[in-house]
Image 1: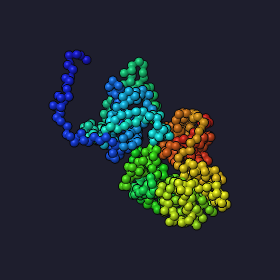
Image 2: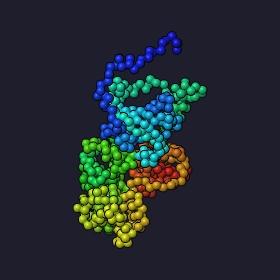
Image 3: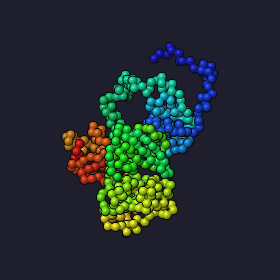
Image 4: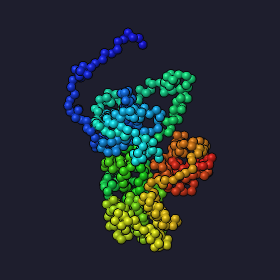
Length: 209
Length: 302
């Protein structure tokens, strides 16, 4: 990488507005402050979401969460709960939430172009009645993330349509990537054996819950 | 697996809906009173429900589902999101709670536990065997099919609304039990415990719809010797026999994965299974989702 290339020019919000134009006011109105029947049905069919958090200084993070459809529980019209299943225990999201409760969620439903977006304030809980509802295969998670909903709305389907995300042919893209073992060997270096790394990972994937 | 079409979904009591499932590919598999089916929901969850319709009706199955406020997604999905017209896959009926011939029956049902008892009472009455039912619930409004039962069986059905009348005295029922009477009980854990305390074990048949909380010896590793295929599969202490067998390429079906439904029944040829199910495994059988062994190996017919 050389320094001869100038940094891409930075625009102010006024300059951005000048280029985009004003939003249609109808779009602002699509945001509601609670979970209605349509949103509840979407969540009940969603097996995947991304969870955006930021620490007290504003450093951002985005983390995937997935389970069976409806794994996120609607506790009432203003409250959701996301199970925190065993992972790598780094707890980036939970550490950020401890400093700064503001979170943004994007829910996906396979085959559906529109995305459900929910923003609100989060905190961790170990409330037994909440964890009981998340039990799968006779195991409950040890923690859940409660989200107090501030705004919820459906995001239009253009991104998913352009990306052909649900087109089965799109999965051919994965064939063009190196295996996770090859990536780990290159990034972590040392004498990491890609095949061994993948075998260990595959073993750990046997227990998903 | 049988494909069905959800014909009706109707409220039948407070927080209880009945589902009528019509065979999508012709007549449905036959069943006997006490049988249940696994229903696979659009959210990938599989749940077990007792059949509570008429066994003579080969066109439809009927089940009833109570909404559980602590639902993991089964009853909540059915009550909130499921609509008539949807196609649903259901299993073949299985029966862990069969009606054994007897000169006389006493049925005890608590709340949604009425479902397996409903066809039992009908079958006993049709066969001319004296049978009575004590049907217990907090109030009449919470008890499905109470009217249907009273209409069909009159005074043979005693409805006890506990909020008004308190719990029925099983001790008194046991004291006046005619010799040879078989007692069938299906209801919540507290009711089953009361029935077990009151009636002699040999006379009582019970079905629970939630696993009984129990403490077992710590899980240990063992070998699953699969006799038919000549393979030995090691089962680590922290994995279920069911998961290990399926990862090893055997296709063991599963449903509840907590020892209630019986989908994952295996034939044991040798070894001492430690049974942890709530079904009561017959001799030479075990349920791979929860049961293990404290010994070094189990020889399975796989």
